[in-house]
Image (cartoon, rainbow, N blue to C red; front, side):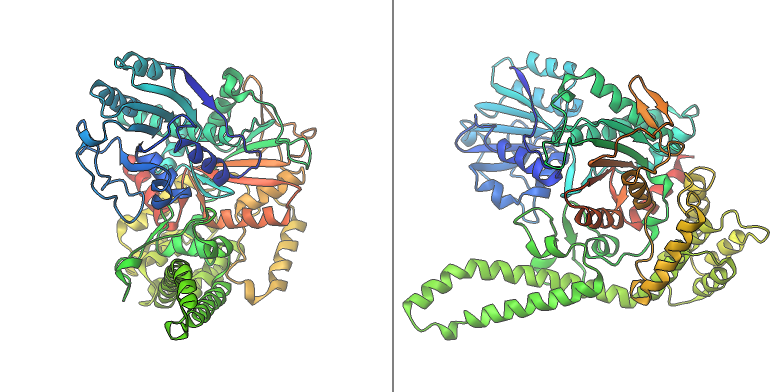
Length: 626
């Protein structure tokens, strides 16, 4: 049972392309598993697969059944997959496992003790004739040995490492879908001395998941960074940078040929490790681009949007897919970064084009057998287009309804002002009015109070944060939610985070220029004035101005260096943010890549993709862990 490590041959820095190439090889057992087969997954790999493929696409490639190895219903046999959530439609139930005993199984699993234990149990009473096992990351030698020792019937034909241990949400956005990592930062910043055993175990599990996920991102895209930098204000970022450096030095799998092979040059790559705590503002803001709005107002998880409960929604639209993978939804691919106004116009055109096509192929226009044949050939395409149109019209309608009901344009304008300008007296006056208002929703009052507290945490002599918290309570915000104001200041207040949130690391000329540009751009950009700290960091990197005092180099041997003057400018940048990223940051990165095509490319990865709800839930977790 030899074990192979397989690198993706793709040279393009593109997460979706890298994962799809693995999946294409997976469904054939990397060319060694022909004929009908069963695909066995776990919870994580199910999500990974669903990001780049549809269930029907997988089943069309000689896959008889997709099942979960960790499904409790499996007791020596194969479940029908009713729990696999690969699509909104569960797989059809099949005959007893005795009828598929001649088939081969392709297993795609994370290399964990639990999964290897399940494989050992499976091999003790094999359901299938052969097992082709593909792990999504580096397999610890003891687990590989355990697997080999328990293959007494020699059913395992191959074991390989396919480095696909992350969700490729967009070509330049990668996520581990790993929650509660704000807690990881908090425990690390506290030194860990007071951690109880349960917290220590949780810390170790979360940390290992982030480390393995980052390793997988590098290996899947076949990159060995020439430079590693990290956020100095975060102990967690430094530890992760150190352990990645150690992995690269000690494991031959990272020692492939350097350079991307791209024609822009040598492929000099920077790995930059950041921490969410440096920018707690971005996850709290309302969003106005398609992908970000959907996640903020409806929830976008594993490329799926739940519309169940939306007024007058049809049953077939209760759960829909919004995926950036090629071939799944070309409209969403084109418009995921479009703003709300542009999106409305695009959907209107989509609807008009569909109406014109259906009129052209109307049954009343069928005059001959040839017309009927052409209609039948076009019918599947028309039906697919009908679903696409209905889906985006339904989503747009619900977004517009929520924007109106929650007065989000008014709320968002004030959020942007809080995030981008300094006016303590004016901001306090407007905030108190909104906290007293019966029309402003409770979650919005909470976010506004937190944004004010972050901006004016150190205001003197009139620090109004206590008065703001009292006004929040009078305005209906529950006391346990008001406590999040103090929680966010402990997690990411001025004493904890780096200096870049409100431009404190910029010179006065840069601040004045940014203020001038905002005023020139005018009202049309009132909802998009804010620029995440991340973009200032990227700008610093590409201009060679990111200071070593805030983002040191990590040299071989784990030594940090503040001397970055002789560091070559990178052509590729992989940014990994522990604690999670946002779709606003992803949108800005995509726009940066488009503007700098052929010069420098940025890939953004993170522990998870936050909206304000998930960010606040993790902050609550910090309070509960104290």
